[in-house]
Image (cartoon, rainbow, N blue to C red; front, side):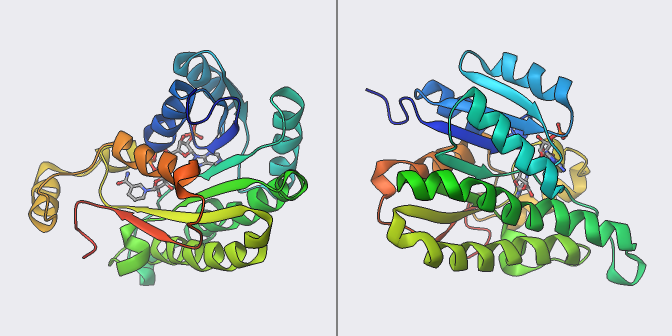
Length: 244
Ligand code: NDP
């Protein structure tokens, strides 16, 4: 008997990085997993690489109608989503005075509004079955802010307010909604940082190193597991002490 035997899991942005580590962990522990990135081919390829039990779907999660189609496809292929990991995210950094409108919209749409669409689409199945686990991936930046990331910080802070509010709406139906707030994690998103920036970051992290995608996936899996059945509306920082 494994922790997630037979559970249907959807990980948005499961093609790479943190989302992929989550998908791999859920597969290892018995779940049926759907991953989605923007492209059909890349998502299907990632699912094949992740292994048996994983299915890839193309979906731009910033598009409300596309999210509804995604949930219909996942339900038809795997069953109603029981565990939802809202992980897909992007950055378009820059100082506010030079920030373009489409960089404000894209970051808010992809990192924040997408959670409204996915949680709403998942609601019917979760309410019907009186079971659901939702884990939203925020960031230490959503808790502390960061110069040059006002769009990203606003989206990630908004995700926390959204999660606490939705947690209160569905708590009586055995649906939990929690947030994981990673610090700096080694993925494509941080791959562009220069060595100099990375050294300065390490100096600020009490544990002295960036985290791994698996360290975030372990926290996500805990919040999705029966061991966390009485935890809802919580924010779990997984950041090597950066947010202290
Ligand atoms: P990556 O850049 O490595 O991966 C991002 C994932 O999101 C990809 O799978 C990408 O898929 C998917 N994605 C992006 N836009 C969309 C979209 N519109 N529709 C569907 N999928 C999309 O990011 P990380 O793994 O580093 O980050 C994952 C999450 O963790 C993000 O929400 C990020 O903000 C957060 N986070 C990351 C930190 C870090 O240090 N790495 C720190 C704190 C939080 P594809 O390209 O195939 O479309």
